[in-house]
Image 1 (cartoon, helix red, strand yellow):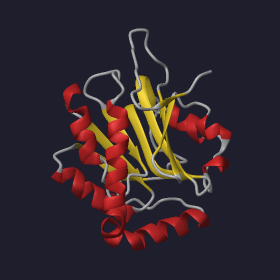
Image 2 (image 1 turned 30 degrees about the horizontal axis):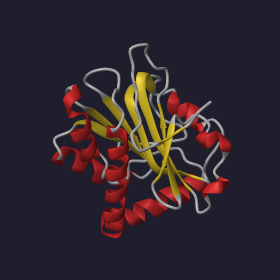
Image 3 (image 1 turned 135 degrees about the horizontal axis):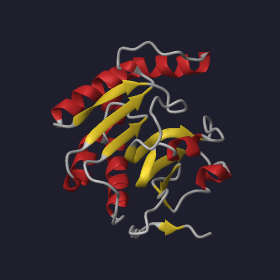
Image 4 (image 1 turned 45 degrees about the vertical axis):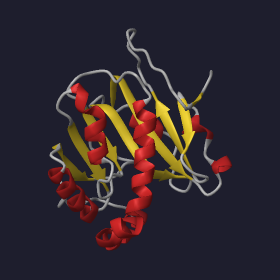
Length: 212
């Protein structure tokens, strides 16, 4: 949970320490920028007609202070009670997110953990979000597949990759995308519809469809 002590590498520890120090002022520094981004992400997701399963379980990987949580409650409210689970490397960010989740009336929890070693069993979520957690600098082979493995049949994987030069995004980072959208000159959004059910029908309004 939020207070757990994590096993981390020296690089993980540097990132964790930086975000722990930043957490108290994070929303003041980046809150408005992040909110605009989250609104755009939710808008893109709302253009997709179907997410399989009722009473959805939502994973928010690299959740930070939880700016996405309340917006997800509104987006998925028509599918039954939403269970939200946030994951972040920084315990301080987790505590702030847990408070936000409680204030939003969300059922769920926030846990401290590493997006590259997610502490969840496979096929656990109807939708998995990872916004501004993957970068060109930390992207590793297999991470997208690991995220896909968390998604239930008929569910969605939505992630972004942040890169100062989008042409340098690893090919494996976008190969699986059913649709992409550019959130800025430095960040691209990927939507993956894994393991579709025969009855599923998905349309993408305003997104660039990927063929092949």
